[in-house]
Image 1: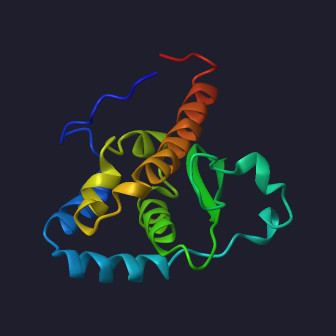
Image 2 (image 1 turned 90 degrees about the horizontal axis):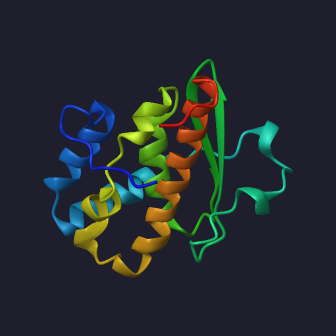
Length: 156
């Protein structure tokens, strides 16, 4: 299933705000913003600690990252276990989680395919782009599953 690039009307305002912000930053300012976001990634909630990380692991990423999707009252909530030293990953997930947690799954599905490149492209993270993009795709997969379950198992 391939995602089409959302138009400006389809892109969630919370995602558009991130992209607008990073589009105006210099490479140095981008690095600083990413460090700030990396420090905002909350720890894994107590009810998820001790879970088998392997079943939530993003295998496309070289760093051991586990992403935990949850659905409550029709809203998506994501959590992640990421090594403290993996600032780029922590930053990406923190900014996305901030934008989509507590929102309907469609908000996650509105993240453009080139989100990682738009946010981090100017600071030379192209070697990590595949893994970072795989994390975004993992979030979208969980959102698609939530939509399918909500809509009675019908996928479109």
